[in-house]
Amino acid sequence: MPKCDFKDATQDLLWLKEIIDDRNANPTTDMGYCYIVQAKLKRKTIFILADCNPEIDKITFVLNCEGNNLQDDEGRNIGVSEVDLKDEKIIWQPLDFACDLNGNTIN
Image (cartoon, rainbow, N blue to C red; front, side):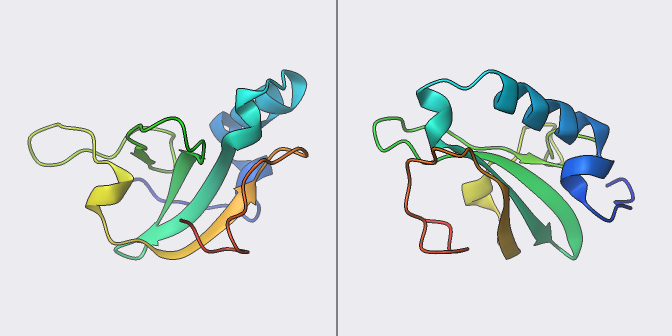
């Protein structure tokens, strides 16, 4: 996993800043359910592009500091439900966020 060196991930990691800038510039109804989580996995910082739309059941992948999907030993992408995350916090959500996540608790 690459070294994760930043003060503010939403500004210092260019790939993440581009995603956020694009989402802010192009809001959609579906975007109201999207949010970005920063967490720890085995003491390494990771990111999750999450979605809380109750009508959609999708796999949410775990990204490293370079914006690449984390993969298992066989090269399969690792889903968020497959790992034990720590220190989860929402670092971006739209102004018209449509979900109640009870503060920093990810449901």
